[in-house]
Image (cartoon, rainbow, N blue to C red):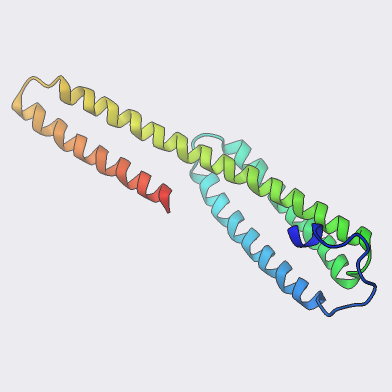
Length: 160
């Protein structure tokens, strides 16, 4: 998008042989988009919250990806025609907006999952404070360790 936007308003009418490179770029954007959609579908399938919103965002990314593909193919056939360049810029921006929305929703699902586990951890911590016997202490402490490891793993996974 940046390359297309920052070009001069009146591009040279002389072809510079960049159409092939544009096809390669388009293929890599398409591949990255399909990878994102694949991961997004897995998240949507496992999600407890925002399920409908995730499916809508995935559909939007698919639609905008297809629109970019169509406009980019038209642009690569005639890269000197300014309206085609503007159409590609608009389609790329729309795809970027759709991808951003999907990423934000996926992040919200992740945060909700973390908060759910944090709540479980806090409950276990409270019950650890209120134990009355040694056997209860051992059982609760084991659960506390398990909950802490689980929370640590989720936080670690989020960092990657």
